[in-house]
Length: 252
Image 1 (cartoon, rainbow, N blue to C red):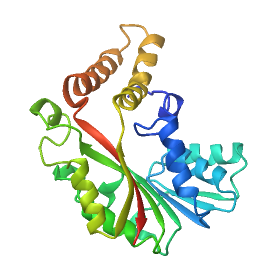
Image 2 (image 1 turned 120 degrees about the horizontal axis):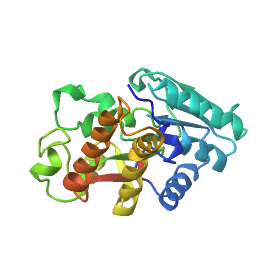
Image 3 (image 1 turned 180 degrees about the vertical axis):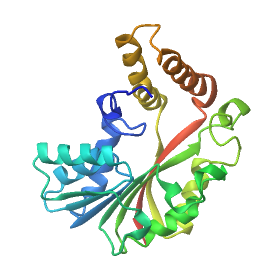
């Protein structure tokens, strides 16, 4: 199996998220100077670390099951002088007890839903209900999750779960949040530039590998196939149709 450069070399965040949008989300989370913050599915921890930089009295816990990403998060925390306030653990978010003043959950709703292998619709309600239990009244949640930006087509659904009901529209997600313990402060979607940047960063490691190896390398065909399939799935499939919603929520 070929080895690629880590995603954090080409991506700041493991989602379609611009610097300007990230700054707005961090400002929202930090506004009440929470004593504790939780990032579910934190990856290499960039958003949580930015929150801790913006809120000097906040302690943060990042959860993910990717040990390599967590190791990177710990290194970044140490490099930025945040290691005493940032803890990163390989732990299932369903095992977390207590409440946090600020919570971030971006692209991790599947934790509370059916197994991905079943290709079932995303269970937003289960995720929102579980996240509400982690917040006191007035606590802040940044909830980022997939939505349909346009009616799904067969080409768009094929590389995903293969079904039109996998995601909902942004307006439906707003209504679900309001019905499950939240007031919606803001609801937005990632734009195409954010998506193009994310998808390009996701596949950049393939391009770098191909440039560093001979065309007849035994793994070259596999790598070319990986790149081609991802490009076809995005540019010929779900670009402009699969969206990523960012909701700024207050627990009520």
